[in-house]
Length: 186
Image (cartoon, rainbow, N blue to C red; front, side, top):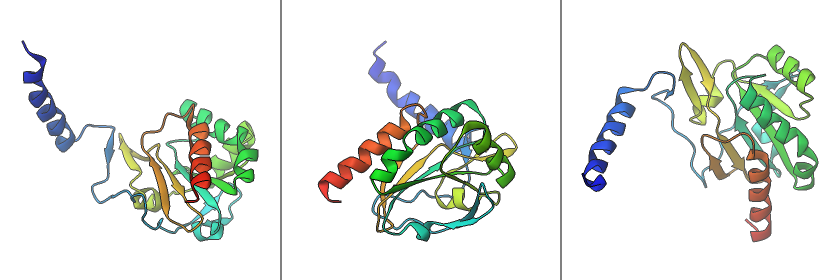
């Protein structure tokens, strides 16, 4: 049978599954992801030290706002180690990294201490910020942040969006994007 005949049926099946909802990988219905060029939604969350941090605190800097599912899990640890390893390069590029998950401040504090995380991770226990950024997923009965990243320019606008990030090369990808934007004067 010609494969081209099957493509419309496959597409219909995928569309049906997405509309019906696949358990464990479902975003909340009222979410929309900010698009490139739009103003990044402001927020205030507590970091791993319990101090309030707002997006507007970083006006004039590049902000890497990355959402991740859960502290001390394999993929999240790999991703955090990449950002930790590259902190010096982010500082050189006038950039700050902010990690966000729905875990508690105490969980973040433990994660940072255990894994040597040297940047701020923020606690979104109300799920509001993850929802504002279209990055809240429903995994079973527990909402989690989806692994998405928003690169925000020094003027507070979304410069680039990464969806369903691969944690291993991610920090390197983001650094390359910042460098490219800086070279082009954007």
